[in-house]
Length: 362
Ligand code: ATP
Image (cartoon, rainbow, N blue to C red; front, side, top):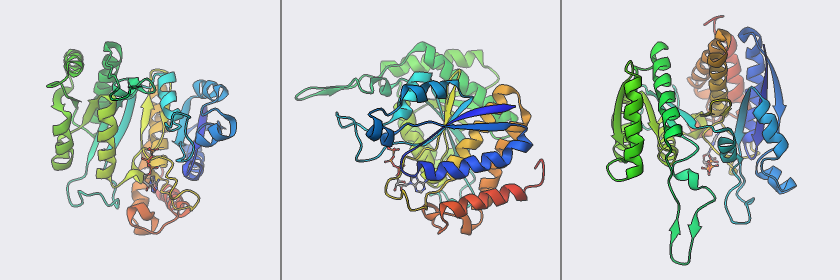
């Protein structure tokens, strides 16, 4: 099977972490039984500076037509729109393709110096609604002389799709032996009507998915529990802004942004990108951690495999994830963000070596 992958390598460390990721995908292609055609598409802050467009129409069209989209990081501190806001075509992509489910795995990786060192391993997933909530107001906020307003929006249609994605994810994690089949709806239903509405829809969808356990929690308590007793979570579904914040908390629990992958999934298309930004402070130095990008590519393989019923791709996803874990178990493969001294190239080479060292089919 030939798969066309749209590649948006973006700004800052984006190209530095994308290149080794594509090389690993090429290595995996034969055993996965696929052939990748990578199509590089211009987008991002550099593109805006050079052409006046952050996400050219041609890039958007090509991304729409691709089988999946890999995106590294976009934005540069000194390149902004005239109103001072950051260049963030990834938000435009979410809106253009209706990528409502922002999937953020929170998983302890051996060797990643998380703050919960010594605690049992973590493995849960946050699904952040990614097209509405408070971000529905993106670019539409009103600032007057002495007051400012942004409006939070929750719709029934998107909430239903979000919750169904949560129940499907919990079911799949249970099949894979990674979760116990539990979804938490995280909101602030005790204060805001919009969240009471959100929670009521969750209960309706839970009733239609009786094989998966359903619980609700307030976002403030969830932040506390993610630190104090994270093992209680399997799948969390939440509003956009809450998910934005909780997923960075999750990245912190994992040991940092350098190992935190993500996926933004819609009905017809999906974008896979690390949780981190373009890290301008370390760009060009060759020291960025490529693991978040590599793990995002693993999520892409799994999504493509599940969607197409292609077991080879799902197996390749699991292999790539295991290779990252195996590589990072050795301090010599850890980049500075993980307390090590490896360069991007050395970390990526360690992942490639771990991939080769895995027994076939293992
Ligand atoms: P954005 O708003 O675009 O998400 P940000 O301003 O939150 O970006 P990042 O660009 O993600 O921030 O960088 C935050 C910090 O984490 C920086 O100090 C950066 O160097 C570090 N960092 C981010 N990604 C990596 C990585 N892959 N490897 C090493 N350090 C990283």
